[in-house]
Length: 251
Ligand SMILES: Nc1ncnc2c1ncn2[C@@H]1O[C@H](COP(=O)(O)OP(=O)(O)OP(=O)(O)O)[C@@H](O)[C@H]1O
Ligand SMILES: [Mg+2]
Image 1 (cartoon, helix red, strand yellow):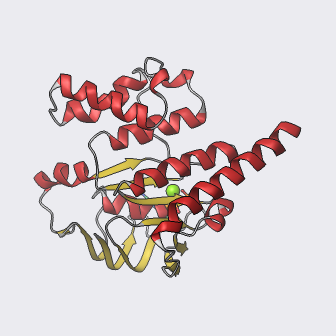
Image 2 (cartoon, helix red, strand yellow; image 1 turned 135 degrees about the vertical axis):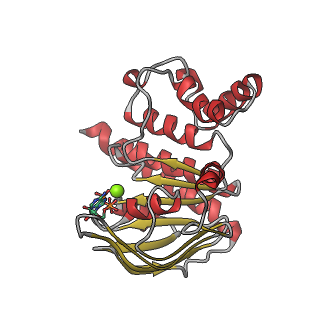
C-alpha cells in the first residue's frame, strides 16, 4: 500500500515539485500517472524510493513511514520497489545479462540462483536472445525491456515505470504496456508515468493527473469486472498494434 498524505516538496532552489498531494494506491492496482512535463511525476517516484524527503506531509509505503525510516532500512524498502528510470540508468559497459544480474549481486543472492533468476526475467520480458549484447547494440524497446527486467529481478511488490514508452513508436509502446499489464496481473502494483494520451484513453485503468505539482485528476471509478479486464487490455493492444503497424507500413 502506498499513501501520500498532504505531501509537498520544495526544492533548494525554491521551486515546488509537489503541492499538498493526497494519494493512495492499493496493493495490485495499476495506475497511470499523467501530467505535462515538470508537473511532478518523477518527484513522486523519487519520494517513494526515499531518494528525497517531502518538505511537508508523510509518505507511507507498506506500513513504513518514509519520513521516519532509518537510513539502514532504505535497502529493504528498495528491494520491494522496482524502478524503470526515465533515463533507464543502464550500465553501458555491461551486457544485458550483467545489467539485470547487478541488483541480485548487490543484495547477495547466490550466483547460481541469481543467474537462474536473470534467465527467467529476460525470458519474461522477451529479450533472452539479446542477453549477451551491450546496451548500445539494442533498440529503444529492447533497452526498455532490459530496464524492466532489471527492475523485476528482486521480485518487487511495486513497480514504478517512469515514461517507459517515451521514445518508442506506437506499436512498441503498446507492447511495453502489455508487458506492464501482464506483470500487474501477476500481482505487482504498477504505477506508470506517461504522456501517452492514446494509451491512457484506450485502457480502463485508474488515471491520476498532476499539473504544476498539484493533483488535478483521480479517476478511480473505472472498475471493470475482472473477467473483462485482461481481455480488454489484450484487445486494445492487439487492435492498436495492428492498426499502427498497418499505418507505419504505409509510411
Ligand atoms: N532537484 C531539483 N531541484 C530543483 N527543482 C527540481 C528538482 N527536481 C525537480 N525539480 C522541479 O520540480 C518540478 C517537477 O519535476 P519532475 O521531474 O517531477 O517533473 P515530471 O512530471 O517528471 O516531468 P517530465 O514529464 O518532463 O519528466 C519541475 O518544475 C522541476 O524543474
Ligand atoms: Mg519525469
